[in-house]
Each structure stands twice: as C-alpha cells, then as structure tokens.
Amino acid sequence: MKQWLQATGRSAYERLLSREVSGAPTHVAVIQDGNRRYARHHGEDASDGHRAGAKTTERVLEWCQDVGVEELTLYAFSTENFDRPPEEREALFDLLCEKLREFADSDRVHDNGVCIRVLGDVDLLPERVREAIEYAESRTRGYDRFVLNVALAYGGRNELLCAARSVARDVDRGELSPEDVDVETLESRLYDRPVRDVDLIIRTGGDERTSNFLPWHANGNEAAVFFCTPYWPEFSKADFLRGIRTYEHRAQSWRRTRARRALALLRAVSEPELAEARSVLRRFRDSLPTRERPDGDELEGGESSRPAD
Ligand code: FPP
Ligand code: MG
Image (spheres, rainbow, N blue to C red):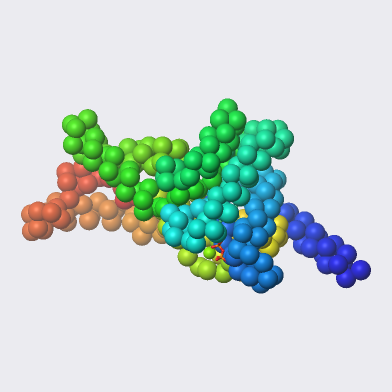
C-alpha cells in the first residue's frame, strides 16, 4: 500500500512537472555520475553500478524524446577513466559494447530515427569497442530525427588541442591564412562531428563540476547546468523534468536580461546625446592614445555604429 501510494504520488508529481515544461532544450548533455557509489551503497561491485546506470541511460533517451529534446550527449568514458583499475575498465568496455549493439538493434531506435554517434579519441579504445561503435554508427547513419552522441575516450581539452593542431598544420602548409580562422574553422575540426550547441548539462551524483565536458559546445554556449544529488542509477523522471525546468527558467531570465539591457541602453542614450558625444569625440579624438581612437564610422553615426546590446 505504501509503495502504491508512493508510486501514485510520484507519477502525479511527474505529470505536474511535465505540464510546466513548455520549451524544451534542443540539446541535453549528461554527466552520468555516481554509479560506483550507488553500487557500494548496495554492497555491490563497481561494474554492477555501471550496469544499473545503463538502465537509467535507456530511460533518459525515452524521456528526451517525450519532451521534444532532439540531441542527447552522454559522458560514458572520459580520457581520465583510462586510469581506473583494469578489471573495472574492462567490465565497463564490455558493458559499452553490449549497450551500443543493443541500441543499434532496438526497435525504438529505428522507429524513432535515432542516429548514434561516438565523440572522442576512438583510436585509444580497444578493438572490440571500436567494432561496436562502427556497428552502431553504420546501422543508424541514415537517421536524423534524433541524435544520440556517446562520448568515449573524450576529454574537452584534448578535443580543443586536436582542433588547434589541425588549424596550425593547415596554416603551416599555406592552405589556411590565420585571418581566415573563425568559429566555423575550429568547430569543423572538433572530433569531426557536427554537434549542436548544448543548451543544458545535467550532472548527477552531487559533484558540482562540469569536468572537461564539451567546453566548446556547452561553456561556449553558456549552457544551463543542473546539478543534482541522486546517483545516476537512481535518477528519476522527476529529476529529469526539474533539469529541463532549470533550463527554461535560465532561458527566460536570459531573454529578459537582454531585453532590459537593450531598453536601458535605448533610454540612456537618446539620439541628441549620441550626436553630442560624437561631436565631442570628433573635436578631441586626437587627444586619445592611438589604440583608443574611434574610427570614422563610429564618429559618423548611423545604424551600423550603434552600440550592440
Ligand atoms: C561515472 O560514474 C560513469 C562512468 C565512468 C560510466 C558511465 C557509463 C554508463 C552508465 C553506461 C552507459 C551506456 C552507454 C551506451 C552510454 P563513476 O564510475 O565515476 O561512479 P562514482 O562517481 O560513484 O565513482
Ligand atoms: Mg565519478
């Protein structure tokens, strides 16, 4: 009876949270932490914790599709994880192989057009993992309704470092000029996978760090971050919906802040004041050090020289 009441209460709470969710993030990235602690708490081995965590992973994939998320990136094996004891590492590799193949064969993945991709320094992984990656990627390559990225042998700094080296090589060969290096140039060299900007990072297990995860796509995009205490195997749909709500509040307050700033600017800088400021600048421009002098455009005024918000 107590369990029934708890379950009924939980599902009512989930329904309530679901109703509050209106504009889901497009891309959610998850740091699935706390699996070994969960296992220890239940008197089990680390690998049991990872296996229990993989069940949550499957559920989260479904929840994402339910609320309209279009891309999910899972931190499943970091470059730092290579330092774990060999038996734990090998068991994790076995689990990853099994899950990648299971995903690639699942009806849900095919019915929902899920494209599976792996991000990371794949060459560092054992052959059996590379084969499972190839299997999952090749079976789902044609889909584009949902993207599931699995970060394996992934490290954010390493990703940026590889991209920077690749740019430097092309500049060195004379194939690229330094002035032409822009956001797209670098982005196209990040593990060769076009990943959308991340809107929301979720981390379970209580640690409040983003651990070298997607610095370009998440930090660079000022992604919202939702830290929560449940271990990954315990992460529930209500926790997930709370994460989505965090994103929505963030997005809403971000839009409000930008609008307020623009309004304050409009009110503070009326056209006569701008004209006066420009005339003062024109008169005293030469008294400024060269590096601080405004250019002709800025002094002439017009739309393009208006300050951005
Ligand atoms: C961190 O918890 C998690 C990992 C190192 C691996 C997570 C991988 C899975 C759950 C398998 C998912 C499968 C696919 C295909 C994506 P931890 O080991 O650091 O635990 P702790 O924080 O309690 O020490
Ligand atoms: Mg951990």
